[in-house]
Image 1 (tube, one colour):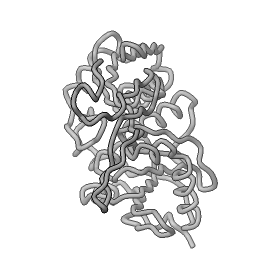
Image 2 (spheres, rainbow, N blue to C red):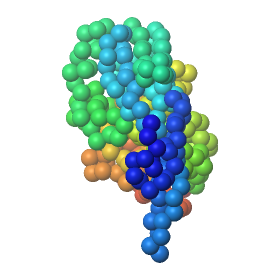
Image 3 (tube, rainbow, N blue to C red):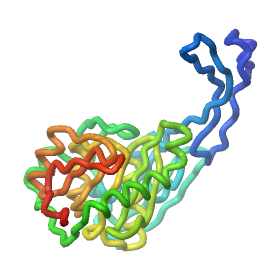
Length: 281
């Protein structure tokens, strides 16, 4: 590899190599300040690599991710997209980190796999560009039923838990963090460059351990868009909290599906878009 000095970029240090399993790596940068000066150094950035998912020997999709928790990511993706309906469908999984491949074996019929493949919908998701169902199907989905209730203090406490857990996000400013929580505690947290990937890891974690989702809430740093609402409805998640905003279609779908949608949860405040009846006190 040529050094950066040989390439004529001002003598910054050579790119630090990243291990195959690392969530981040260091790159040479210089920072311009308001005095007109510049400071050279190393900056942590999120690692990004393609991981190809094979289902029953057939190449299905390539996900862009940090390369962590690939078993949970693969299972969560397949469950969320309908390829894995129940744990008894799951036959086995093999991860090849070096090659960037995950092979999953299921008991589902090939005909169903083909049918779902043909129903891909291009989305705005970062880290993943398609969903395996028609977005408008969500309008006919059964509204989410849940007994979950939260106080404003519990909402803000769980957002605080997420912020304290997102060390990689703070270091790189290039990852999304998502957590699954009860009103009283955070259960599991995952980071990735794609907010969908982080959600899929959590779904896979719960699917493999048969953890119910209907009485939990999802807390995320990612924006709230229609595909997150559709995914949540199919999984039975009734409440989603984000540090960022919701889109108009996400709000329409959340209203139709009776999902509680909370955004701009930061600095002691939050905005309730839909489902305010689940917020008590």
